[in-house]
Amino acid sequence: MNLISRVEYFCNVNFSSKLIEQAVEEFSQLPGIGKKTAFRFVLHLLKQDKQKLANFSDTILRLKDEIKYCKVCCNVTEHELCEVCSNPSRDKSTICVVEDIRDVIAIENTGYFKGMYHVLGGIISPMDGIGPNDLYISQLVDRMADGEVNEVIMALSTTMEGDTTNFYIYKKIKDFPVKVSTIARGIAIGGELEYADDVTLGRSIVNRVPYENSLIK
Image (cartoon, rainbow, N blue to C red; front, side, top):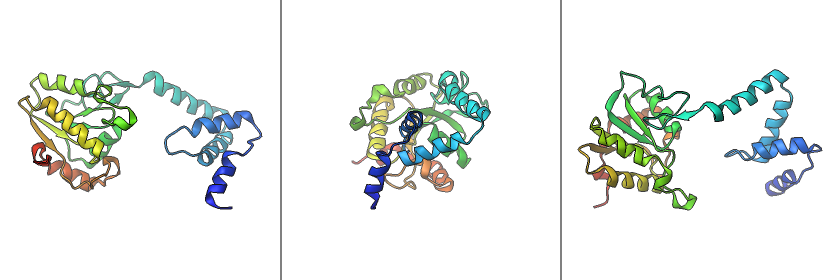
């Protein structure tokens, strides 16, 4: 039986329980999770005691009920301000613009950046129906108006969508008296920040260049 046949067989298998089938269907809706992996998840959960399952389900529900967005940088948090924005030792004059929390974590792990962040919540992608108004771009512009920011670092993935978002933001903030820079191209073209190693990502931030230099003349 070839790979395609095995996949088709598994997708059409009778789970002998409608509840198990429903659980598999729910898990398989997660990004990157196929039905075979989802089935393993369900079998694993069935082996756990009731208290562990209760803790698991309670944590999932709390994610939806208690997680909110930082009122300054739009990062996810359990409080009004995220840990970075509430840290008085951070450099508030420098803002690093990223796509989501995965990029914040990746940059924080390098230990090179001590400024603030602004989390867009995605990148402009017409193919996916995501436009500028679907992102936290206007909130970034509002932060520029406060007059405390000296530099904005564009740290989006080096993809077509990332570059499009960079350019859109640049057009929005270029008239403010701030330096606009972008991470050095130590990150491979088409690469995503969360998969870059700490040293490469850290050096890309330290060796950032003026954004205008990245534009095609």
